[in-house]
Length: 85
Image (cartoon, rainbow, N blue to C red; front, side, top):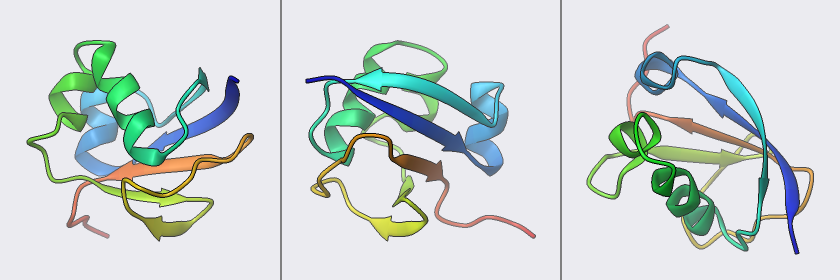
């Protein structure tokens, strides 16, 4: 079942992606699966969200890990481990 999601990008990830947010439709069941779907799109997603990259994630403004279940109509944020003010 596909889900409508709002994806937000912060700091260097936003710069690499070229946008601060986007609406996506995903079949992912977890945050980790969503990240894999985004990486599969190729660059620039693969460049900044790839498995070798340190990336922090939030679901509806709460810090989460790859195994977190992804509900429909959620907001997911990706950002580097350290961000400036």
